[in-house]
Amino acid sequence: MDLASALRQVPIFSSLGVDELAAFVDRCRVRTMPRNVLVFCQGDPGEALYVIVEGMVKVFLSTSGGREVVLALERRGGYFGELSMIDRMPRSASVMTLRRTRLLVISRSTFRECLAAHPDVAYRLITGLSARVRMLTENVGALATDDVRKRVEAALLRLAIHRDGVWRIPERPSHQVIADMVGASREMTGKVMRELVRAGRVCVTARGMTLHLRSAGSTRRSGTSTAGRDGRSSQWERSRRNSERVR
Image (cartoon, rainbow, N blue to C red; front, side):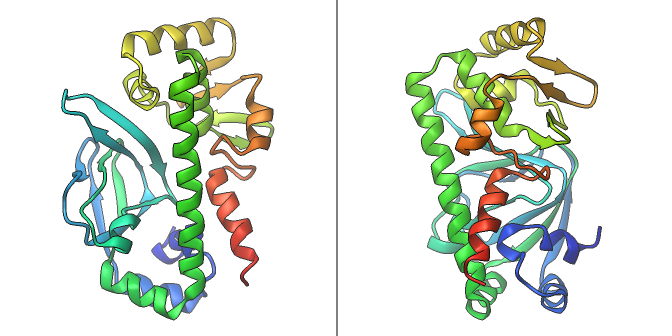
């Protein structure tokens, strides 16, 4: 897939025409990184927005005790680093690659010129930020009210995509990553995962996971899951639907 086509799949840029996308991509640079490499660290200056052309990254915070709190996993079509583009503050979280990852790097000046020329991109950006705030609010509420099993199930659903009537996680996350997402130990998370597998609620394969969680249907309707009908995240779906209203 060429870079312009990849960029067209990103919600905030989906309204740009072919020529506009091609001109925009010419002003960006591409960065390819191996797995387990930091893209940037919490507290670093924020000078660019990143779009994932291929691969996967985790967005996380590091505690004073050395633990990690995973805020999100982003795949192809996702983006990160937008907060510093808006407020010029240092990075609020760290980002590390989980697979070999190809990134489109958009400088602040290029992005601001795009916002000035295409106000609908700014609207889509706000819509995406709203979806992320809602997701983080739900996560905080779950930490306070749900047990580890419920938090693990919710995390799996956030990672899953819905295609052909089946909920799948195409790239299996490690127990440690899931544990860092739900605020539990790796041992407890592993125990919960084994219970879900034995109960037939999670099927683990070499390529990923298939979910058979009873809450999948209701979660999808309520918007808690990040999985959408076409395999993109529901955040992408909500952003796209809301964006249509400004055309």
